[in-house]
Length: 385
Picture 1 (cartoon, rainbow, N blue to C red):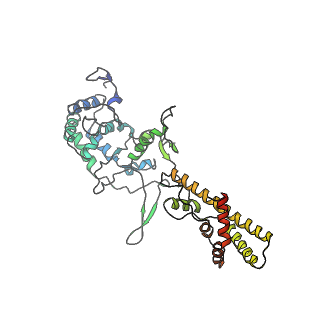
Picture 2 (cartoon, helix red, strand yellow):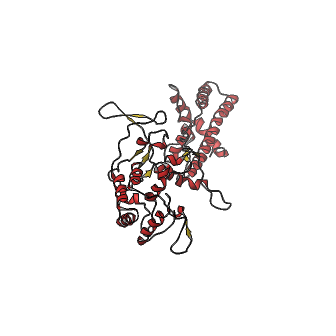
Picture 3 (spheres, rainbow, N blue to C red):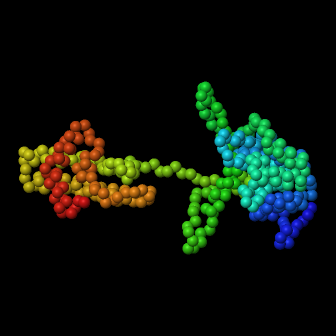
């Protein structure tokens, strides 16, 4: 085995991981360099890359790896290839699930090639979805590893895999969905294999250290969990722990919060949720009626104190509601004019549930001269907005 190889430009010893990897190695290539890159990859192997090995790798490569759900799954029932959806032009992402001795060989066909001026793609990617340089890649690979090896890769990746007919017990979720013709269909959902590494790539910035004076690093509720003590037994292309995140259902809004949101969006002013108000108004109505037969200073002062208290608390509710609406609108980045005209105190008091036959009584006394006079006097004193 060749221990190292000099790069073409700088004479720096080339290491195995520089060219043999599932990751993008950071080695920009011209079209004419693909052949020499495959030669560099081949130089690190003592054993030949045969058509038999290539076929074995491709048979265990697909879009979904069932072993990611359960490592106890039988090896002959561990890989799926989801069909390309009609109209979907995005390239499918295959990952291998091979035994440890085959992982280095799998890196050959899954090694990303960074061809200048073209998307970074592996031999597998070029076979699954060809572009204008795919033939260059095919010719370079076949000239280095042999036409029979290339044919085995091409056939192995484009031939449908056998259906999975067996699952291990315990680990797999089962969902029953109704069918149009009656009865139920049993399904077992699993995630695409690429989602495991893709998930890690989008969460990387959440684990960065916060540097003083720099923009705040985003955080989240992430949990790292090891997939297996030997992750290479599942896929050499999936390394490290599996990530999970906690998604919390938004807290249900209270009735007041829901009405506040509707108010911000142009709806009615929120209800004043104070059950005692109806009791106070009924007592106020009784005193109004009683004052018609017997009226003295003590009764008038008691009448005024009672309704002044209701007016004062209604005014406080209006002011607090406008402030809450302004804060909610600011938090949700919604347009809202906090200084808009508040609703009349009478409508704030009336807009509630009234027991049978009490609404007419409440509306009568709140439209009476005494109530309107007390509102005006409180407004004049500056007690009411």
